[in-house]
Length: 323
Image (cartoon, rainbow, N blue to C red; front, side, top):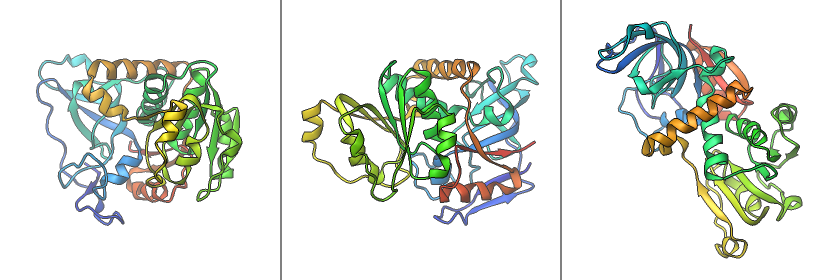
């Protein structure tokens, strides 16, 4: 099969190579199935794994990619043959940048009605991150004032759309003015253009109930200052680097909660909660929630998508078309 394979870890992705004749995955065992993939979506953890910078470190060599869409083409013992041909979303810890993948049955689920393959491939990671962050950990309710940082990226844009679906007033911040219109289309009530190195959020000081932060870096301390009494700060990622320290007495004086969010890990530790969250995002998808796809490439050119992700030039999600 065709696949992208990471043979060696490196910061410049030199160990990642396209393999036109890589070995097929193993035949499905009990309660497993094989999926012929049609599209996969890349996420920032995929990039980090290539250098060993992510908390999950697959054994070398490995195929990157944690989410995809495809059709079941073989099932193992214990599964019904009528599953063959079903169109499904695949969630895996790696292995999706290939034509075939073998996974345990709970790692697939039917594609929500109305999503085409590219959207289905790009749906889960971003929507799950946003939903678990905002609805579960951040307890966002109608009328809350929500600040979304990094709003032009895949995780940021779906955060805007999910916050709006939950009834929040969404103030979206980005350092790229060219992304403002797409962010408005995702549902933002207001878009703020920030300087990447010295972001100024003073106009929002004390007026925000929840901050959704997938970027970290220089925006962290200014964004903390925007929180009102009993505000919640959702730490989702550090694309812009580690944030500067801040005086803990600020959290005490304003009753602020600083909450780390790992949506996938939450589902692994609490499978029932994971199922409930996936059902919730699929219901939102059937009501119209969609990932914004800013770049598509064929499988052979997935390295171009990795490069664009590393450069931060993609608006929304990047998708690899496979079939």
